[in-house]
Length: 372
Image (spheres, rainbow, N blue to C red):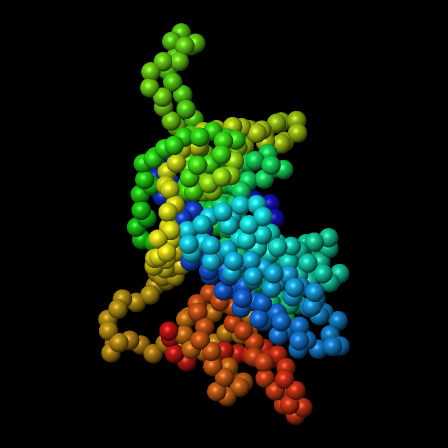
């Protein structure tokens, strides 16, 4: 997919607030716990699929993926245990949460290596429905720019993970060829970006504090264009980044070379905006603000339950996205109910087949019976 670059002004107050909030969200315990839980749901469904897949179906799921899946789940558990205690080395090279995401990308590459849909580590065509359902469950654990706090790679010229606010704010960047990630819902009032705290470091220096840093240009006035005098000024030089203590402060990309089209490696100064001390006291606060649900503009005003109109019956199929949190019933199977949250992928049902009594996976219609 070819993207058209959209420009977001890091001098603009709203843009700064949105990027700051999103970086806090991407490094929150709540988001990484949600990633882990969504991946655990996928892991369970994948194992069921492998064990119940018809033997004569040529489009089968590779059982070899199970070892990778449970390795990833174990890494999530280790990383979350450390994050809950306020440790953030878990995003450094060789540490649990970075390893978990690296292994996840490997799993995505070899998820379904069927020649009709896959070539050289990339999906080339839409998956069959049963496979696509599992792929959707897998992708439900993914968040745009989840690698924002990762240690920068020397093999990539130590470039900052976030070169532009576009990767966080442009809705088009959440849409990929065969899947789409949820765009975050911002709270009605975004907190202000705090004034710079210091310290100021340079690209290549060791980061001294976990937190959100801003790249800046530092300059002084000059006498006769030669001698620097007067107060230093610090001017924004790009997108905020979340940097982890003990990692190298990254470079930023300069203008591309017109001959090679490669971006120039540019050093910059970084100043601390916000030190991340969350969870160090052993307390995980309410972080529900990071997962708000979009409100429909045409929703009626609350006039009391006595005046509400009966709502239309809501039905979805296995593999669809759940539109409403609540209790759902499989219409084809009596007394088979589940509790589903808005945004999750609706599951199938493992039940006995008519006649043979053999337990099989069934795609079903789910009907909402009670809102959550």
